[in-house]
Length: 244
Image (tube, rainbow, N blue to C red; front, side, top):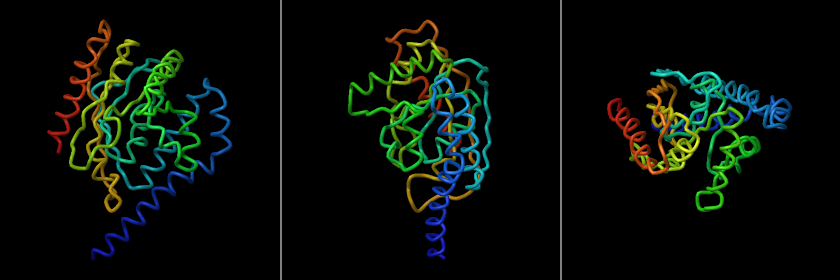
C-alpha cells in the first residue's frame, strides 16, 4: 500500500508541473504580447488568473473563499497571506479580480518557462542585498501609481513544516504606510496539507481562504511599521490557530 502512496505522490508532482507549463506553452504568443508594455499588465493578469484556475482545478483542489470585505474596483491594496505551499501563488491569483503585482524572491526566475514571465511581470527581490530591497520600493511605487495593487508573502519565504506562522518582515507594511493603502490579510488554511514543499505529500481536496477586514494605514507614519506588522500577523495567526 505504501508503494502506491509514494507512486501517487511522484505522479501528482509531475502532473502539477505539466499543468503549470501546458497553458504557458499554448498561450505563449499572447502572453508575450501582453508583457510588451507595463500598461497592458491588467490583460496579462486576466490570463494569469485563468492559468491559476486551470492548475487548481486540474490538481483536484476545491477552492472556498470567504471574504469579510471585498476589494473595490480600481483601488490599490497591499495583499498579504501566509506562505506554506507551491500553490499559494495560484490561490492568491483567484482570490481577487483586482490586478496586483507579486513581490517575490529572485530565485523563482530560474524556473524554466514560468521564470521567463515571472521576472518580467513581478518585482524581484534579493533579500541578501540592501540595494535590491531599496529598488523594490521604487518599482512598487511605480506600479501603485498605475492603479495596481501589490502582493507580498510577509514571512519572506516558506517556513519549516512545523512552524504555523513565521515572523513577518517589515517591507509590506512600510510600503503600505508610505502609500497610505489598506492592507488586505488573507489566510490560506489548507495549502500545507494539499501541496506543501515536502515532496512526498499532498492530495486533492478543499482549499479554504478567509479574508479579514482591511487594516487601514491612513494617518500612520513609518514609526507605526512594527505595530502594523504585529497587528496583521496576530490576525492571521489567530485564524490559523482556530481553524487547525
